[in-house]
Image 1: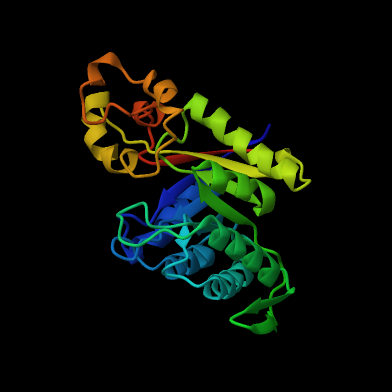
Image 2: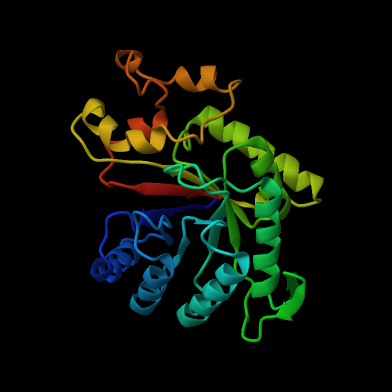
Length: 275
């Protein structure tokens, strides 16, 4: 098993800080850096990735993640292929249904996300594609950029196992052992259904980490992510809740799990990618 690490950015950083953060991540040995794509709270993700490409040499990067309401698949594919060319082939694409974080837009269906994954993979790979009734082929694409799906529910996880290069688990319950096992089973089901080897699918187990002296001090800082609508099914919640410290049972954050209990880490935010 290979273990790599990624760090998520673009939530608080100014545009003039992106280059420095990307260089520090690279120098610290991180394999990936991802950029939040929420127009109401983060800087433009394409601009951030361009800066990262021009100021690093080895680290890979991409959106964590695009949604299909603010970005059309053709715009995603063309933009990421351009930055992939600039960086010498160091980009990935993260996409999701959208809508969950902040609740500002209606999430897209599993079918729409699937179509986007297939379109982006084929477009960046130089294949002929169709959109809006028109067929086209990218004239400059030279590499099929890996596409990762942000998924938490069974249908999205299974679909990702069928067609995506990788899967990004949400920060909410993202690193709880029981939830990891359940999610991996859904991915495997999709992969086997499509005749794929499940071990070929890259899996990112993401956790929200905040440095503090005690768990109680850290909870308010990670509460927003841990109370997003991206929650496990009702059948999994009894298993998840068993990992919550007794002194937090009456808290509004009683659903917290390992992802919140990792706050003693020396990194404020860290997404662990397991493949």
